[in-house]
Image 1 (spheres, rainbow, N blue to C red):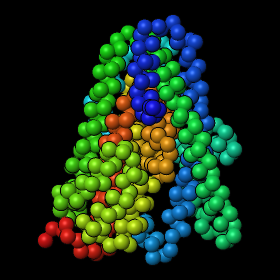
Image 2 (image 1 turned 60 degrees about the horizontal axis):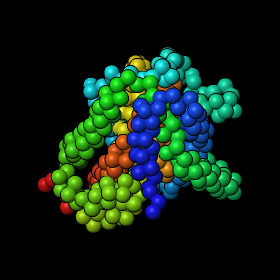
Image 3 (image 1 turned 60 degrees about the vertical axis):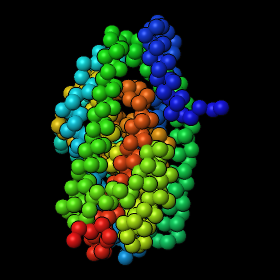
Image 4 (image 1 turned 135 degrees about the horizontal axis):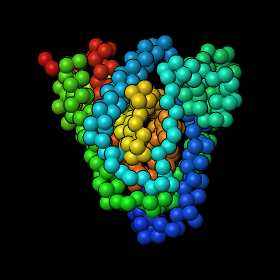
Length: 404
């Protein structure tokens, strides 16, 4: 019987840690496997960003005039809820400091992070040479280029638009296939990375304790977002019964949690939002599928916490500007990332590359990703349903969950 990928990664984490502690001398012989895996992830950064963002943005802009207003309302609310989730994660990870105190091995010494001014970051968005930006994995210019391409693609003549739309859709599909093949080899790469990390760590029990603190930090952030901020938005911003809405969404939330997939919960989400919350099919059929593609409250929160945790573990103190860059990149990368296999791992590599942190840091958090994946998938779905309610209220719909 073939083990599922998340179990393979968990075994790789445990066995890699044990190998690093018991056979530290073997690290030079196997570390190249981790380097190979990280290089493969880095190789995918530009095509994933470019194809997925262009396809996602052009798909929304290309909607009819009657749906365009609905689309921009929906996207605005999705961005708002993701921003709230990101800020919650940033506050918690800086208060709890789950990565502080980890002693990394000499082979993974403190990286040299380039500190840039606001002017340098802003001017860096527009590259002097597009080919140079693409070839050197300069993430921010690629994101900007993809946004501009996605916004302007629907304005082309019909024939040209059809050709380019098919091209970007095919590019997205091809990139996903290659990504799946790279992710298939992730247990080998993670084994080598974790072995390298544990081989020179003087106190591996402290490292494990810090990883547990990281899990608790993410869990606390997801809980606060789900049970505090979103209900407050619904109750005071849109005058609906947040508790009743949460109970109505029990089936899709349990489906997302048990499968660790917001896509698998999509049919149950559509039914619950329309039948139990009483939202019109027009709003439901637009907001929920769109949310499953671009809204990732839970994932955005987790990525920010993970990147700051990795920075703390390496002893890198990110400036306020760099922290803002992490939040901003997390927000942008969420669009289109829902279709990426093991999206958390890939998104994390994108954000780490933006602030110059080593991709090897992913090994610190990859082993605990499964349980967090279940929680963040449920939060992603709940965020979608909350935005559907908000949009319905903006469209002046009367709902059974309204507060009289």
